[in-house]
Length: 149
Length: 289
Image 1 (cartoon, rainbow over the protein chains, first blue to last red):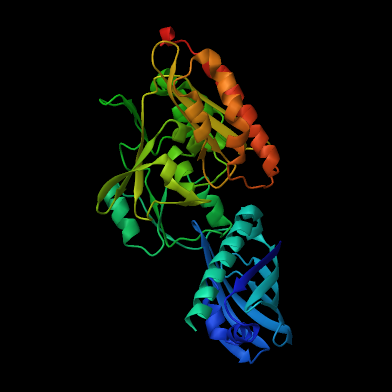
Image 2: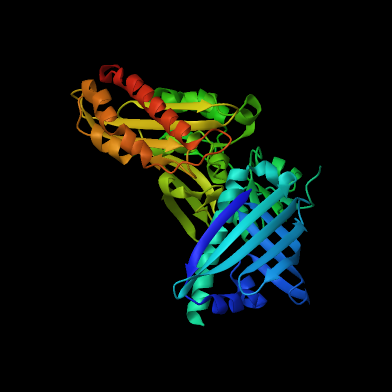
């Protein structure tokens, strides 16, 4: 599944970049993201992602690798993990770009999410819409975070 | 595969069942289990406690109550509703729907309440029950409340029911006009379905109409423009009235493309099914009631 989203954030690219690299803050904008652990700064992290769709729950301890980083405009991240309950394998690759938009910035995220295993049988339509909702929530939280800074 | 371990209760009263869920972390009511047990075996749903409600008397009755409403107990299985004389007399469209839900195994053990509480968008009963203006009676630890079917399903697989609220009864006014339901399906679940209920004013005129389209978005949706076009119409003018507003009404619907088909295709199907429902409803004879 591929997702493309972009939003205009009321901050300069440098400010936005600083927020993006502030791992505890940025992970607080990701719905269901908990227990973020830094293994090696700007290289490897661990986190748990929890999601619930009706009675269905997933809990994915994920290994997060920063694959490439070009300050202050681009970062590529890869997260992999297995759902604690079903063993479903999830992989998410994120390509994040920051560009100037007048005095604000545009944050563009290209995401690829792959789901292999029993959860995929839930129907990807439901999962796809959940990912969309999570991006919407992320956008709101990030704008609040930047606005409060 | 086996589900993860859980405790199992079989209380004999609704209050005990509700208390059992309230006292657990993640407990769930269980009756037919047609969705729940499969999901537990696949381990996509896990619970620390199953509360079997099959030992609670009184949840599987179907009656016409003193207020001229049809009451269906939440634990009625589809097969029972399909064969029930009260439903057959007053809402034959619901009998037919229940006679054709899913497959024979599901119809024999799957309950109408379970179907509603699962909140699966590709389901038959929610659409027709919404057209019938049904309300759902939920019993919780602090008493009961009623929720309109229209407001019950929040989104895919999510309803407004709290985990320790037991759906006990489905209630709707006895229909006073034709009730029609149609669906199109590729497999066992409807790809698109349309339910319609008219109230008649006694002189071949439609007093009011309720139209619901299901399986397109996350829950059944009303076609308000079609409802408005039908209100106060003579039966002879129905087709013209619907066709005048249909395209715009369908374009306003939330439609998810999924394995059942693309958005435009599903919208088109909804229009076809609606017009076929209307054709059937037009043959309704009040004298025969």
